[in-house]
Length: 80
Image (cartoon, rainbow, N blue to C red; front, side, top):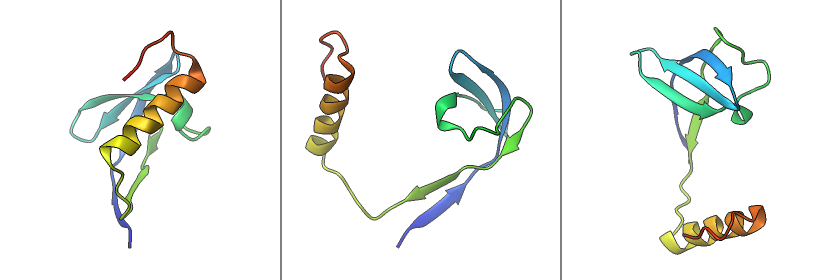
């Protein structure tokens, strides 16, 4: 069974691949714009869904995933 929460954001601006999001309580969050829907533009209010599953990954599985990503992107020898 999935648990679901939602929060509302206003897009302040989108620049250099980052979006500045404002919460209802005036918190500022910088978020990669590539993860936003295409129709989200400055001034738009949107409510993304955050869905938690029952699946849990071990710390080793998380580290292995990160190492695979770093290996795939060839990030100048930076490791975890």
